[in-house]
Image (cartoon, rainbow over all chains, first blue to last red; front, side, top):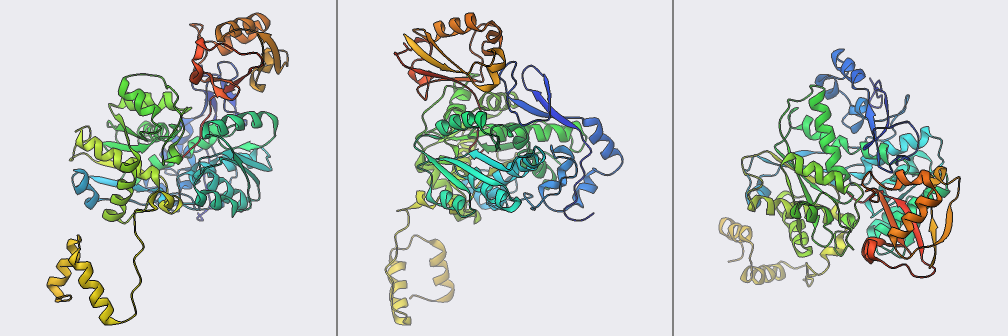
Length: 443
Length: 93
């Protein structure tokens, strides 16, 4: 098969998550009967048959192109769909130096690195890829979203690639790199003087009036399924086994529930062995409605007004919060949150130990993981995966002032020797001193 | 206390297509009673079995979530615009 062939044999349709009413396939996210969210459900017998016939076995999957479309049978893709981009299948690797700092076993801590997801360097590329497949099938010529930034980038880029018009609604105070990274694709960017929750509310009203494909409103059930590919990849990249723990950043709370759904599907289909996995949610203290509910034992969300540098997670009224709480509690996991200074420290820690530059959401995840190890909620010997969902080049503003610009020196060896001597006098960098000892430089 | 209530498209099949009403209600409880009376079919869609507003229905007053204003204890002001909006999400994760 070519790199871009996908096999879609499974049937799927929308069902209400609460009352189970079936809604077929249409651009809709809400059950009219009980106002609850809709979710895609599958005919798993069709998938089982594909596995039995060897078309969707572990081996068959491993021979497919290295992108998220290798799991097409478990995604809601229209018949005849041809992907236009190799989205997903981002690296999963051990993080021994970070593990040492967090108190984890060197071989047991893994990073799932969606900071390098294509095409726009966040996990949102996955959900948008699925949503636009349905936008095309439903005949929309315009796609849209409310966004805290990463989704804006992903919708704008993939809309450009596929020839959709794009209208993107964002809070006016978004990071400049995320606004520029949306403008550049030719999307119409509408800045709203308000919080993300207000932008979101406005978009649900606009979706009522316009015949647009809002990826996170009327296409939301399909869109959300794209998140499952993070879970499929983690399992496959661990050698078709599940980890003991997953630490996931939470904004709307969807990703953590979809990773759980992905693991559940793999177990149900016999593609991995059943085992307990604990789900841990990470939030910024300045916007922590889900972690607050978990820590106080509440099953419901009390909305908050966000005040955090982690703007990609700044959703004060998370729509999937209820399900995220359920996922965490039922798994025996936990949720924690970290302050803005801890977010910055954690961004630096991940960069300095593993060479990964993540955005603020990644800082939230790493900082939260550190807390969970210190609380013995995650044990060093357990296999633990941290989900890094975005790239630090989009949120460089939070590091402003952390690094001082050095005075330039003349391009002369003597000047450098002088500079080195001065640097060594105040050096806190052990590696630099070791280098001096072995090479004799700087004496 | 005249206030305006905007009804989303998803619920208009239970209101004979009516998208907006003006009514007198001094708080959320009274507003729900007015809606129950005016649109009996709507009741089971916006309230759960215990009579509470359904989990995934958000209520805004002049663009502010009513829970930030005191929820059921908020006293409507003349001219308030009330929005019933389904709960949806986005963001980074």
